Image 1 (spheres, rainbow, N blue to C red):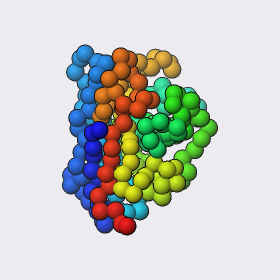
Image 2: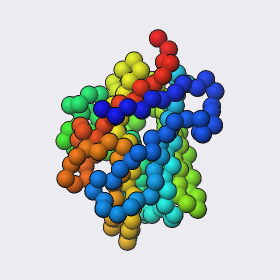
Image 3: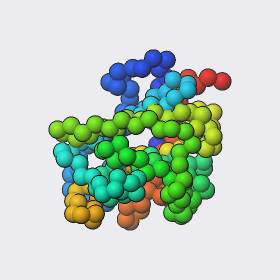
Length: 204
């Protein structure tokens, strides 16, 4: 299983000091695709993360500004699971405007979109000339409450849905993933799409 080690920082570091996941793949796309990077660290209380997604003019569907509109938009995603059975697992899908689609699910794709993350999420999104970034803060206690953080380890999926075409609410997306699930068609809601996170220097 792929691993990503989250360093401990007592004070906020410069993001340049934080190791990045850059080996995203697009197993279902034959053409080249824009770069994506993910970084995270913790301070023993909070987990900080950042996506950096290349590609100008990200396409976002906005009609009533509801969280379900994220499904028709460019976005980055984090899935957290208790174990390989994925009953349950928890999903955060975040678009370039900082809107969050949070939901609980159970294998296979039995999703409760009315569910809400147990603590407030702090999300900041920024669109620039060459792409966009999404930064967020998650309480470690929330991850423990959900049963996905065990001592200093978690099983997490890290993904991006790159919207290449948007007409009205009809979106065409390419899918990029940290871990290749080896599925014939794009599907992150399977056990093989997760990797392991190790939080370094966690207090006993």
